[in-house]
Length: 172
Image (cartoon, rainbow, N blue to C red):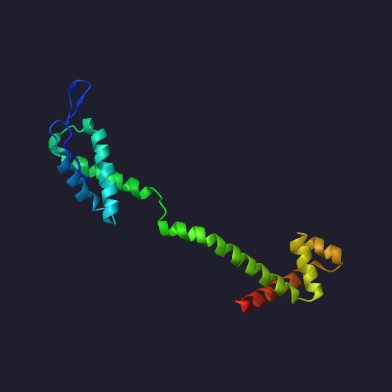
């Protein structure tokens, strides 16, 4: 990007930055931006944003001799703004797009493994799992429905979950 010297008159009055060498300011912005950037492209973005902000805020410079530190502050602030923006990398977008299909396939496989593991349980254990998770009954309600003590329901559910965990771990 080539920046030309910009000498404008604003509303008929002299511009406060008349005679500034914007090419030199751009080079300064690039030098400052490389302190913060990880790549050439990122440094160029920071420098360009800083130069635009410097142009729009050129009337706020009180001391022309402090131009370098003023510009360095603008570049630092633009770098912080740049890092605050969350921009996904193109490779991240590909992963999201292709990852959706992978997630669906993985979920189907996991569901199939779970159904297979449930099929290997005996009828009493399957009934406990069905009451607890399919019908969303509390352990107390299961104990009342089956007519067994609450402690027995808790122990059996614990053991069934442990069996399912072992069975699923063995399939992976």
